[in-house]
Image (cartoon, rainbow, N blue to C red; front, side, top):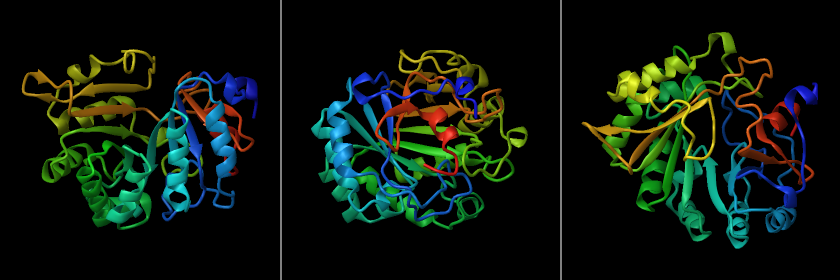
Length: 306
């Protein structure tokens, strides 16, 4: 792999310029999803003491994304979360939610200071979809996790990967689930398949960005013109990301400033570099040697390994 093409580099935490930083605290998982950017399960868990030291040295206040494979498979998950807050950073846990179907585990996370969770809902509430994408019929556990997250009033992001000819009805199903479970505040992330690590859809067969917009428009009862009016706008008023569209859902003619938001993201790697969102100034990843590298570039260079 030509690192110059990828614009790959590493910096010390003191030289950090990223605001979103991924910390892969474990490569273990309790699922075998067909789409996984780190399918290698033989990598040891991230050293907690080195992580604490790293947190104390990062320049700037960052959003630390506690990820895995499945971060809750690390028995000390809450200790990593505590270390983030002890050093003045923000934190979000990205999880498949299986362990969060147990209230006592959700309480442990809450007691560690966590207030923001990203829950994977590729199958929404449909076991057939979960089996086709994540190789597990787990809808009941996902819904229970969603209920537990709501009851403890976490900030909620959900992630749904759209796979062609499988779950293309997911945006509408997600809204129906939220109505049924009284989830009134959430960021719904709708994505296509990213061709990194292990994946089930090649770029040529993927659901493309315009199709994602069309699916959301039809199923969420909003116009494509409305969604597209948010194209090329800076995310959160700061970041330029041509591969994402962030917008609030409407209630009649009223655009909500709070409540339900949608972020459509193109994870497709149909470009000359072969990664989603190349040269992102926002996303960094902690390397095996506790340096910082651009996220997707680092993942691509380490496919099949770290």
